[in-house]
Image (cartoon, rainbow, N blue to C red; front, side, top):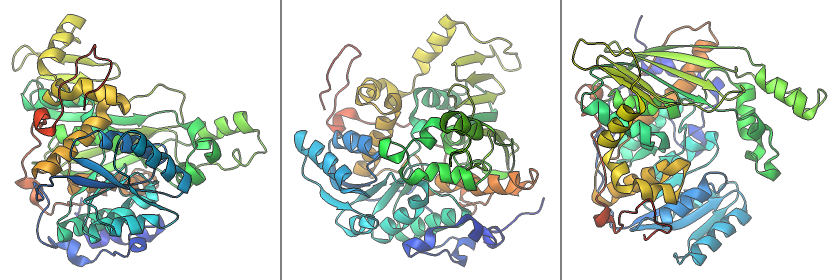
Length: 476
């Protein structure tokens, strides 16, 4: 297979509707060499005594971000923005009722621009997919670090624009991949780092979640504004939402830190689940039944790395099946698999692992190898909420790194590699599974980058304390 450079990748991406130009930023040939001031791998920005955060998007996910961030010492929710003024007012009222400083407020179609131009340290982007890259680019151009909900970029053009802008401005650009902070995912990382799985050769991840009712839900009743997610499924194919199952596997398997994606192939089923739901729920003559989304019911992608390892990623939001991220790591000494959680380890090198451990052995592994971040702050995180606590741990760890001048756990290259699947999977699935080369967004930096360690926080330094299971209230 021939290698494809960045210029060849970008040819033809206009059909994907790249939004970088909307933010006043366009990608140039600087992507073929390391542009700007240098690599962002391991980059640590100057420490911030107080992190002043502006949050854009106060709908399904944004309101939770306001409440979590406001609970972390040394963090000020300094600005709020949404398309609708009433959403801004609700969160401003929440801040006041909980003894937090009043935030500057912005609303309307381009209120986010004024927010990015204001006096902030970090822009926290919780908007629909097509606004993720434009807002982050604008924020970095105006001197702000940017963190972005998933997926953070929908096209290769956007991936490159975020990489180059982060490098040039020396501003962090991190994807808010909360699943990297899930309790099982962090346990798995700890097991891998301590060698219990041996050399990990294969991983499997997914986003399997029946979202049909939410996709068709009237925005006035809590659905996606303007049906934006349904419209994306109407127009696109492949895997538009790969990161929840993928990025934790990338961390455990050292992608961009000792290995990298080489190429992928993707196939998708036809789509019948959305049509079936729409006909039953709204009638055969409804606009919903006549929409006929293009995105298949099940998309399956296989990625091969340059060091000969593989990852399978699936996407299915239209089938009647329970939620799963699969979350499987298979190595020379054992295997971990979630949904339900199971583990099997060999007794010694060369021995087999033919059966899953029983409950007693599994519980012993869980207790001994639970990730330190969950041991220290897990009960606090569960009480703070956000997908069982993973959202709070993500925010806590990110704010801790910014306050202490540490590299973030995920960088712009992790963002770009994972989000590149949005376009590459569509290309592959639309062309009989044709293999697609994955760009090296690090431009060779992966060869010397250090793998992510077992990182945690100094909870006392943060001004927090450990919370026990039987406590009914937080003391933060």
